[in-house]
Amino acid sequence: QQQVKQSPQSLIVQKGGIPIINCAYENTAFDYFPWYQQFPGKGPALLIAIRPDVSEKKEGRFTISFNKSAKQFSLHIMDSQPGDSATYFCAASLEYGNKLVFGAGTILRVKS
Amino acid sequence: DTEVTQTPKHLVMGMTNKKSLKCEQHMGHRAMYWYKQKAKKPPELMFVYSYEKLSINESVPSRFSPECPNSSLLNLHLHALQPEDSALYLCASSQAIDRGAYEQYFGPGTRLTVT
Image: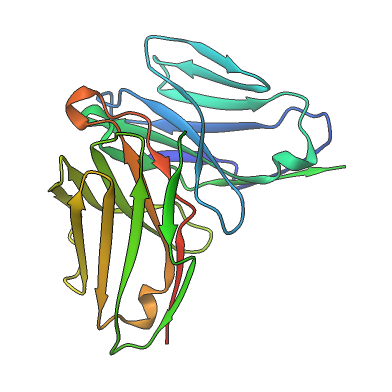
């Protein structure tokens, strides 16, 4: 119940493509769903986040879609660029966000 | 400014050494966190401090000893580590938990190698 399942494990797209990363959860007590981007040798950077009362959120080229009934959420990267090549982690939080449960991560490569 | 700084960037230590990792933030956050991240894995929560008090210890071995001297600083004291403790150690901070501590901001990490 504490898990967040993330797929795919890795993803290769051409420049300009729209990679989609999916996450699913079981615990309906989760109330905050952030996405983090991590480059090699760096710490995770908060990319975008959503709460369950919203079905979609856009920030620049990044969009989260949230399906509360299905307990799924996904990250879409519009017009992907080689600089977007990184590992992406979805996460979910309990108890006012002091415990983040991370998905396993998706390694994205955008080919130029 | 959403910067969390960590020192050192890299650390190599023997199994009998004592060393410390340092984390600092000046965002006025009152919750601070230590995570451990192995290669190709997500971060794993180790400790949470809220208002300078330890609120969560995720059953971390006692060879890891956290300390929060003030609201801006977080230390992780290391002693008698094992080679399997080699990892990237990440610090994070957020608003106080009682204010809805949703956004956690991570530092760049300390790459620790135990020989």
